[in-house]
Length: 220
Image (cartoon, rainbow, N blue to C red; front, side, top):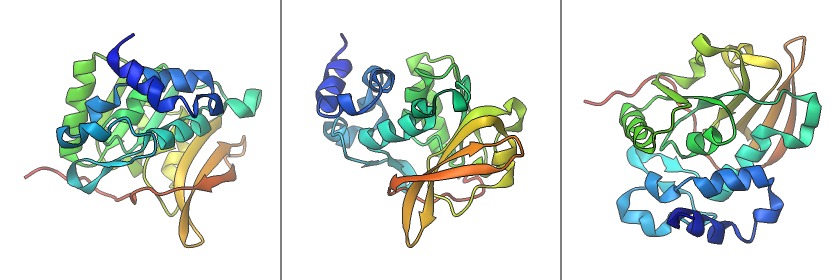
């Protein structure tokens, strides 16, 4: 077993029975230390710590990633939703969530609007030699029509509403999970797309994410 797997198992020991073993295995395989700035690597394996990265962005806490991944996979919904073969992530950030998903879903597509973060994440994914993650620099709220429709869509930042563009790119019986503003706070909402293109939704729990922004932020 690799050192990061040992650290991950220690980090996850108190919550491993609260999550599907497949989600725990994906987290265990992913070296969180690889995704955080060197000056705070000592905090990489703290279960409930979100950590700052470049451009005033954050890498979600491992516990948050475990929850978002669990809601997205939707094992609890059984055959009422599609088994995921493809996922679109809006907000690549450090790349941590995308790498966790790459252990669970065959094709991962992720969009980042901040060029510096996109470049850093691209280098990490290349170094890890993960071949099933595709990323691009763009405004995530446009989605990625070239590979649509997706079985799963995950928003990694908080939004006021889900744009029709993303709904159109979700498969029928597919699942979309997003942090959303609600009653003065933020909540995680899970949507399932119906045959008439309507979305059913369930509020899952409160959360704290950075806000979604539009446009592309280029370097220089």
